[in-house]
Amino acid sequence: MSFVEYSDLIRDGDVAIVYLGHESMMHVKVKQGAQTQTRYGVIRHSSDLIGRRYGSKVTCSKGGWVYVLHPTPELWTVTLPHRTQILYTTDIATITMMLELKPGSVVCESGTGSGSLSHAILRSVAPTGHLHTVEFHQQRAEKAAEEFKEHGVDGLVTVRNQDVCKDGFGVSGVADAVFLDIPSPWEAVGHAKAAMKRHGGRVCSFSPCIEQVQRTCEALAEEGFEEISTLEVLLRVHDVRTVYLPLPDFGADVFAQARADGAETKPQTPVALKTTTPPREMQGHTGYLTFATKPRT
Ligand SMILES: C[S@@+](CC[C@H](N)C(=O)[O-])C[C@H]1O[C@@H](n2cnc3c(N)ncnc32)[C@H](O)[C@@H]1O
Image 1 (cartoon, protein in one colour):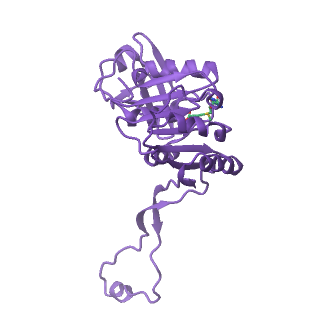
Image 2 (tube, rainbow, N blue to C red; image 1 turned 60 degrees about the horizontal axis):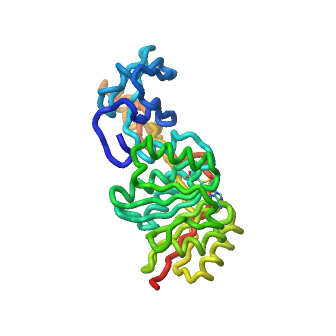
Image 3 (cartoon, protein in one colour; image 1 turned 180 degrees about the vertical axis):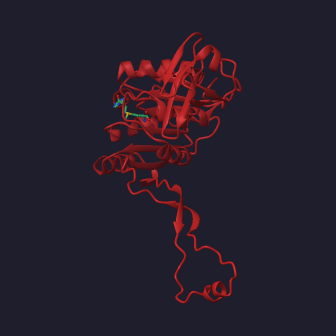
């Protein structure tokens, strides 16, 4: 198992996603002899997981069942252990597209945080690209490096434990794209430019507050970045439901005469329709995404 390559069978040492319901998933480290408790009972790794196909329906000890799924960056984002606030798939999808990430891209990122975005970047740039990620909190940097190894992607990523605003990304002239998710991104814009290739590339900064955005845009303009644009992405998830619509009353009973004549009439049952309903509450503001282009030099 690797987060950037699919395999059919669950093996000892894999990270698998246990699907209990759409809103309820967890990751498990598959280990010979180990057990995992779920609300449907115990999953025994040796007999229930190892050697079975990803996507299998596994019956737990209490008779309930779960699906065991192959890990993906999206499933990892909803099951990972939070060490920081993280980016979610709606923002990540926009970042991936607007940074023009593709197999072979070299990307710089700071901070690594909980590695939610890092996993998505790695999947996009594999098998020939590379991620240079910088995290100044030592335990977070170590934990991220450990997870990358467990997930079979350590060959695609270098984790540096340093302050990106003081020491930069540890590389220069190599990056196609740079991503910043730190409190003072304007202090890292010069380092972002130095890390990027001579023939340019794309940069993105994520900030919750508009004052951070203003300072970052100023710094980007001062460093000669072009096509500076800030956007926010809001997700609306619709529920699918069956609704019952009563038949309209058109006044006179057109079947009355027929009934009087003894004919069979259709019962006036409401009509069942499948429809989607917008959410009553929506996920709120996560942050502003500021994009810019480094011109060729
Ligand atoms: C919000 S988290 C990043 C979350 C990450 N994007 C994710 O999706 O999991 C911000 C991280 O940046 C780190 N950080 C803040 N300032 C930094 C700096 N100047 N240099 C390096 N890392 C920094 C913090 O320690 C924290 O772990």
